[in-house]
Length: 279
Ligand code: PAF
Image (cartoon, rainbow, N blue to C red; front, side):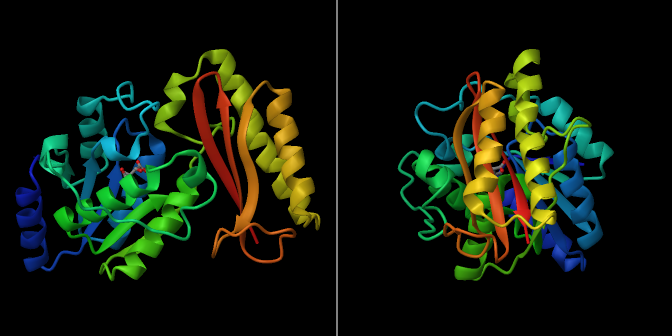
């Protein structure tokens, strides 16, 4: 497995693979890999003959009061997991390789980034779309896989790929959960044992919503109120619980089109997100 540090070497490597007739698949990550990331690698390996995982803790998607400095990192372990999963190259640039000191060009999606995390984390999605555009220009993937856990991110990036004509097939892969239901996330390491237990109220709320929806419940306010109540009863601080259209992310009063029930909640200082596709 190659470890690649520069954009130029990444581009040359990808172009060489393509000349050999290999399709290139990419899993963009910020490292501290878990089984959720590895599930994305498995999907890439079904779709492409060469697999790149990028590991880059992207400074431009963190707000000034967010966790950039303490974001968990373990490059050796990440590389071992990638090697075991059959990854061909890890692309791990330093921030200076990605961002010149006078860097000044941004990719901004303007419709789907309004609500939810876009509203709570100003500038976050500008950082995500810009870095993913740059990662695509480095690795030149034919296919890229993103997790549904970051549902708004996945929708925004699909829109970016469509709007800017990136020749990349986008795949959104299902959420991978711990045995007890907690959605896998690199940020779960921040949770104390007690917070981790209480954080299960998120996935338990989503399970209740899925069951209610299967039983015919369609009223957005009632579905959201129940999820919110469960999180608050467990001592979580809800950032949002909302049901929105999966096409437009517009608010919906009743779930009568493909929708997403999206949750963000704090347990202690840790902000967790999770979601459920409805319909
Ligand atoms: O989902 C993530 O880990 C990041 O937002 C991404 C897509 C790798 C961009 O930095």
